[in-house]
Length: 83
Image 1 (cartoon, rainbow, N blue to C red):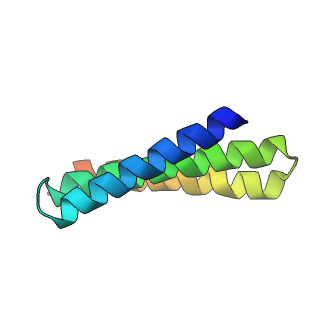
Image 2: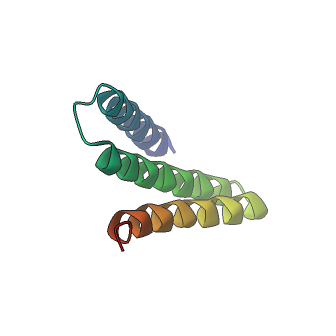
C-alpha cells in the first residue's frame, strides 16, 4: 500500500510541473494537457484499485471507469483533433 502512495505522489508532482511549464509557455499546451489528463486518469485507476482492495466495490468501479474515460478522451482529442 505504501508503493501506491509513492506512485500517486510522483504522478501528482509530475502533473503540477507540467501544468506550470505549460502556463509559462515553456512547453506546448496541447501536448502537456493531454499528458496531464492521462496521468490523472492513471491516478484515478490507482485510487480505484486501492478502493477495490478495501472492499469498496462501487467506488472502485466508478474510479476505474472515470480513469479509463479520461485516458480515452485524452488520446482521442490528441489524435483526432485536426480531423
